[in-house]
Image (cartoon, rainbow, N blue to C red; front, side):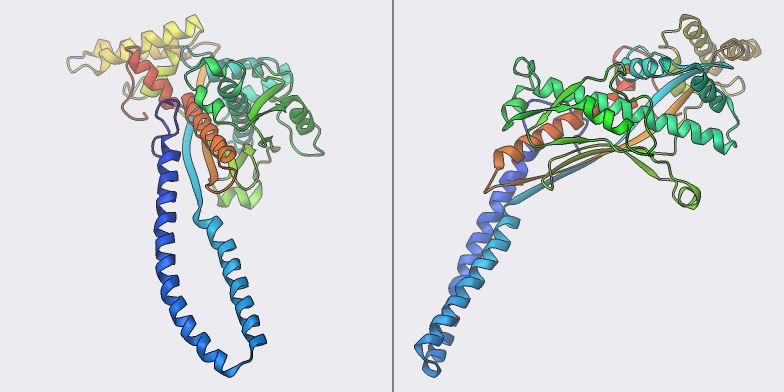
Length: 413
């Protein structure tokens, strides 16, 4: 969907345009069928007259009945297809997790302007046992060639993505369909629904935690901060959460785009919205003493950290980098930047900013001749929720920084 990043205005312009197009196609098809039917009917009348000469009356009735049955069958097959509008969309998202790593512990740094992601992840990780955090800290500090450590970090990234998108989807759905929906500008979404069902999120998560030998997500539990016990969804739709199973062996080596389905909201064949993460992750390049241009994207997160000491060191490094990049720089400016980088990294807590890649897909059918309100309401809800979920993308964070007057990169650096 091309306008996935646009602000929601309370209407459903895409659906209305596609619905009108479907009605137009149906009218054109109807006219064409009438003309063809007249011509074919004339030919059939001539052929029938010839057959009557050769057969008796009982055979004529059998032929007429067969023709009626065949026409009914064709109508039953064709009309549902030509009167159905299928709306699909696809969006690639990226979220960032600023990790603050020590020798024996790790935490997710809270970033001003990116609290939706960082506060949730920070609380979820902080409530895990110390040995578990120590294992993750060792994996984050390990060499990039350490495959075991990378697998540990990849699993952590995907589990956090499932937590973030599940809680955010339910939160946005509550804003669109909950009790306060009539008092919001997007009230048209709630009005378009045939009904609203309250999904028992706690029961779904409890079942996920005890699902046989399948790997569980320790961060997504009924007691996790930010996870509500229930959430509203359009009537007839249900929330599906699948256990996360990382690819192993040759399957992982052959496919660097191995996927992990995070969640799906489905209403049968007519309605489906899914979020999928990639097992492969990346890092934002951090500032370097020998390359002042490197780390522009990372600086956007570091300068907005809630940790005052690390934030002050990051701001000092960025100012030194600006001076080192000035055309009139001196050797003292380059040395000052090197010292600023040393103060940023020569401390017990070292930053590492993970990049997690996620894909969002949706497919919604609207039949013009039956259940149009139910299907139309589901589509409007799915389009609205998907637009709102793009608000946790790093591009939205960078856009917010630009509006606040902060320096931002024109591309990933």
